[in-house]
Length: 457
Image 1 (tube, rainbow, N blue to C red):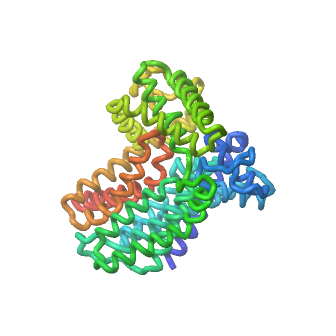
Image 2 (image 1 turned 90 degrees about the vertical axis):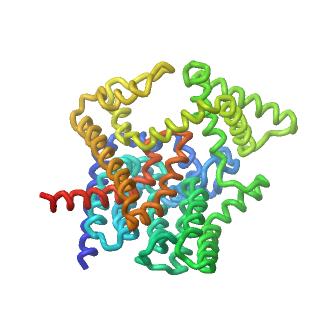
Image 3 (image 1 turned 180 degrees about the horizontal axis):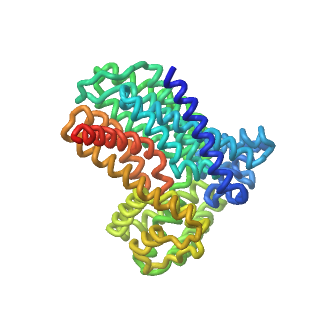
């Protein structure tokens, strides 16, 4: 009963904070609801809502992104008669549910620590990444909801074989539905199939007997396949290939490979990007001349991927260094870059001579006149350091505490995977899916630390 009252309070409080944030920072910014790199979501959703199927604005089949978020938008467009503001407000409402899921996720890892679950969930209410992205036509909120539900069902169903504790509730139904929610997540963001590999790895090293492991793997995979099969089959029928999306090749060419070429040639990014895109177009023309007809979106993206891979291979050590830097930027990046880009008096003009120190300095000493925005930026820096330090300390302590090590090793492969996948583009928003885990484990450390400190005093 007490938990029920707390959850009602949590949702009401979360809804209030989310609505106030969006109202004050986006009430005059309706033209900014659709970021430039999210226009594809809107275009495909528009086509779906108009009965044209999952297609581009020219009527050709769309393969560039997975369809989950566009299907959600199309549903909203149908209900709200293509009113973008009402769609965003519904997304804001849904984002207010996330702290409740974080509360349940915390209990999935630490069943008897109610205080930890309450603190972590309240902290999530003020997560700047979610507050900003719930008001943008981006898939972050939708992905977070389904991925956290998957995590609640999956991580509360087993322990690793090295663990003595049996403090979990297993059922094949839970494993099946975790596969279902992972499948939905796979159709929202193209990382679900990588997460599937991690879940298989974890179940293999679970404390189940061999036959139970096999059944669990089969049930999980069945749930996942039931959701993603139609999309993979559709792509196979249209192209003769099995794939989730065609974004990878173009994304790596336009960003990662262009950045590598820029650094290798010691030139500016835009010059390298334009050169590589022109080279890509020439490869497309050559391919079309060779085949005698126009090539499709997937073949174009494949050519972009081949060209990007060529640049990476030619500069392998520089590519490794840049990959590490991108992961670093994902871990330590600030969501408040949104405020800096929106309210800065003069946005910094980065060149090939701009150092990482120069970029960090622009965040620490932003040229913004609004004192409240400056307060938010510094507050985020302090809280990010607090969370990352707590998570790191939990990892250190777990080496000497077997019980903590069990929980830490369960979640570490997933966190490592999601952060590693950002090697191609280091952005703070790519850290959002792991932030609930960072928050929960960090506060677990800090609660224990301060309780022991209090006893010493």
